[in-house]
Length: 182
Length: 383
Image 1: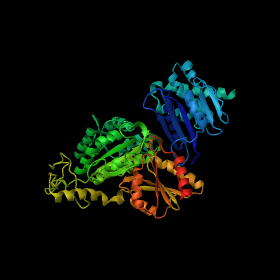
Image 2: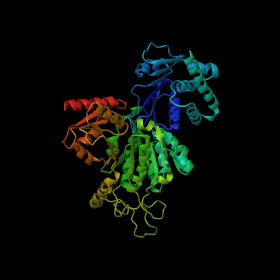
Image 3: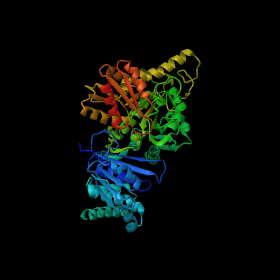
Image 4: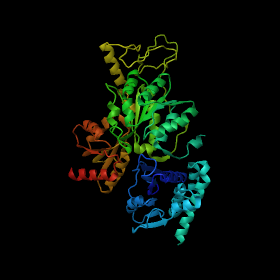
């Protein structure tokens, strides 16, 4: 049994938060670990708050929701305001600086990265922001290997946009590397 | 092929139900999609035709239920999936399936009700509707999974029990379990044990469609299978012909009840966690059982001897186990996402031997471990 790690991915409906959660969970499975993924969303397809939860390891049949996340991705100000304070002490927050201001939270490690703006300027598609975020998150946290996340993306996105998704994943990784070296 | 099937996969509860249905031999699905069960219909629409089965999207849930009854009468293994509002509409025909002894499976993914309630929010408010939703005295088999893997296993079991007992079987998921994605290793097809309804021997001139054999269950002839017979929701004799005879009626209703009641040992399923030395027992099912498991573990860290009892077959309810539990624990706490539907049942079986406390939540949120832990502590210190 591996130690339980709780990851919360949050933002607005339409940003691909839930798909990012499913892909991350899929990558965890590929590494032979147990995972529970769930989501919370309203009845509307776009807009409104969106949240995906990924819990790695822990006891089987354990509580399937997050208590206090070890890792947070927030892609909207609302999400950041709501969830950053719930981060476990010493946890990591990855915030999309396109929509989220620099917070004053202490006791957590904050990565303030231009996730959506990178998807817009480099790929011309804001839709790809979820993959940029995933690339950065995987690089920063090391919770799954690069190969596993790429395999999961291959398995879960439509073939027509696969290359663009993989490039977005790479961009996220570069973003994380650049940030860490600053 | 087998090695591919046995790989660990990430799968949603609803998807596991649909995969399992096909593995269990289901070849007919009729339904009207409704949140939070829609993925089952989507999956069946994609996959069932590939296996030679039939998928029909019906105009509503009344006709969906009618369609699976019709299909089952011709020999198909038939299921439908719905949520609260649709489950309400299905009730009349569920009674028909009970009376006409038609095997079929109804999957009800519970959301917060009443009425259209909160479509994307979990609930467990249909526990008593599953038991008593259709009118008249009737047997009910209802199973309730707590995980994706168990959703798979219980779907196979539901199809098998329907065939075994010639009666509708209800699978009660809650929205949390239905939408959860978890790691699952699917069994190889050859490892899945299937039960098929007993059919009459061919050319048996003495065959009567409603004459039971030794286990109280009549062999079932497919419509179009060579035997001409009548099917009705009215009280009927062994030929299937309507009857107003009190003797016929009494015998039929009793047999419908006992054909299941006499075999509850085959149906009962439950699960215990840290119960051996427990002073406080938490009773929970579905997703709430997972919150309860965490709460029990946390209570143990506070040196409180708590344990979890989880009914998997909600109906018939394994009441004997509660009876036994009530003799050795100080208190039973029933945690559920309704206003105490199962708490009443537990209280009945506890028979006043220990207090039964209801922890009821009806706001569309899964009960958190902390809420159960707090109640355990209150009961422990207050008792």
